[in-house]
Length: 107
Image (cartoon, rainbow, N blue to C red; front, side, top):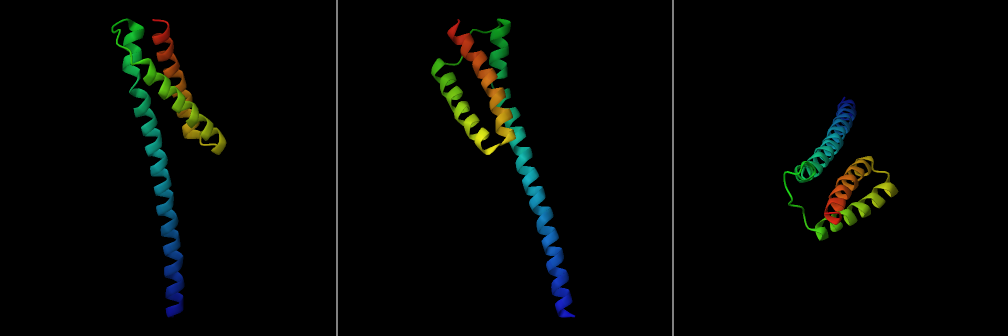
């Protein structure tokens, strides 16, 4: 009887661990996607204002180049480990940082 109870307890504890691990992984993935939106949304107001001609305040060239370089390194890493979140995020980042870079250089 005690052996059966131990086996039952072990079976349910493994199921609970599996469910908690699933929730933990999904929460981490969700945090990553929310972070992606927040990071890239931070550059949208500046880019949008400059495109519409409402503002001439652009970030310094050195900052844009450093971010662009960091995105390139992240992109290389995400390609090697096949991380879809980083591939998608860095693709968006490259686009917006390239737009800012073009605005600064062609100003």
